[in-house]
Structures are given as C-alpha cells and as structure tokens.
Amino acid sequence: MLLSIQNLNVNIQETSILKKFNLEINFGEIHIIMGPNGSGKSTLSSVISGQQNYIVTNGKILFKGKDLLSLKPEERAGEGIFVALQYPVEIPGISNQLFLYSAVNALRKYRKQPPIDRFTFLNSVQEKMKLLKMPEDLLSRSVNVGFSGGEKKRNDILQMMMLEPILCILDETDSGLDIDAIKIVYNGLNFLRNKTRAFIIITHYERILEYIKPDYVHILYKGHIRKSGDLTLVTKLEEKGYGWIC
Ligand SMILES: Nc1ncnc2c1ncn2[C@@H]1O[C@H](COP(=O)(O)OP(=O)(O)OP(=O)(O)O)[C@@H](O)[C@H]1O
Image (cartoon, rainbow, N blue to C red; front, top):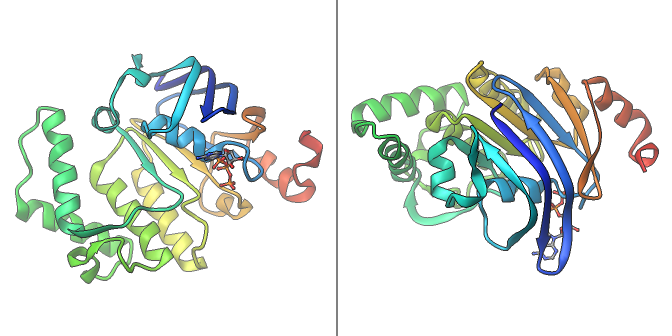
C-alpha cells in the first residue's frame, strides 16, 4: 500500500471540511477525484502536502507505512510526494532554472544521493521542456511570474518530471488549458506512469478519459467519498450531474 487515509477529519478554522475521509492507493494506480465546487478536493491535496491552516482533528495518513502527518512539508516532498497546486505559486526573483536545480538537489540530499551537476541537469530539463513544448526562455524567467495560465500548468508538469515523485497529485492541472496543452500535459503524465508511482488527479472534465485510463474514479461530496467506481462514473456524471449523488 502506498497511501492509506483513514477516517480523516480536517477543519479550516472552525469549519469542518473533510469528514471521515477514507482512501487507499497502491503503487502503479491512477485515481481520479471529481466532485462539486467546495466539496473538499483542494483541501485534500493541501493536507497531504502539509500546508498550514488545515487542522486535522481525527484520523491518520500513512504513506509507505509512515505517519505522514508527523512529517514537515519538505520531508513529505523528500519521501516522494508532489502536489501541482490548483493555482501555481509565483516566486519573483528566483529563476525557474535555479528553483528546479535547487529542488532536485534538495531531494537528492534528503535521499542521501550526490548532487546532480549543472550540465546533466540542464540536458535533462531541456529534454523535458521539448516534450512539453515549452520555450527555453521560461527557464531563465522568475518562477511562474508573468507566465500564462497554460505555461504555469506545463511548468508544474516539468517540475514533476524533474523531481520524479512517487505520489503525484494534480489539482485541476487541466483547467484553463487549450486542447493542445491538455494533450501535452497528459502526455507528460503518461510519460511518468509506471508501477513505482501513483497519481491522484483532481478534475472537473470528462475529456480526461481521452488521455488517461484511470484505475478508480471517486466522487467527493460534502467532505467524504460518496461513490467510487471505474471510468464509467465519469460519463455518468457528465450525463446526470451531481444531483443523483445526494
Ligand atoms: N481559508 C479558508 N477559510 C474558510 N473556508 C475555507 C478556506 N479555504 C477553503 N475553505 C472552504 O473549504 C471548502 C472546500 O474548499 P476546497 O477548495 O477544498 O474545495 P474544492 O472541492 O477544491 O472546490 P473547487 O472545485 O471549487 O476547486 C469550501 O467551502 C471553501 O470555501
């Protein structure tokens, strides 16, 4: 078992957001999470990544058998968790290249591996940027500053490809992308898909099925998973909306 979330209750300030939330993920699996606006999807990704302001009042999260909630955000990243946020963060004054290089070497240090040299790093990042059809000048610009919405999302996938995480969480990475960009982003995801890692993909769109074949689809409703199934759930939602879930 890669990830096991058991009876998780999460509050933001006094408000209860996730309620008795359960989810189990094995290596190699892709899980899609859908759900109406405000049902708690981003809260889930934020809690897993260790963002502040989310108060766990009950339950536990085991990642590779370890108590995830006792780890700092950087330790969670070191253990192999990567979250592409719904709204990618801008970092003025830090070049994309320096950020990526530092992030890759910070992970390598955590894993007691020697640092990667700049030449090998640059070759690797340029190769991946080609795959994602990203112009090279995005490397010298400040992280996400002035990037278009689509460029930010591709940059997230570039980070994911460079960091080679074990659990990849994509929070609405496909929103605001044009048709070509969606294809490129999901090609990047398929490039990383293998038996040593797993994905949680949060999305609102049925079109994901054109690119990704998930193992499970879950519907998050009012803070807990109300229904789980296979990819036919996505088409059912597209036809019927969320009314039948209530
Ligand atoms: N800082 C906060 N203070 C109070 N309530 C918050 C805060 N952050 C989130 N919430 C509330 O938590 C609930 C769940 O939000 P969340 O972002 O997890 O939903 P979501 O399922 O990702 O929605 P969407 O599909 O619109 O992105 C919402 O009702 C939201 O208003």
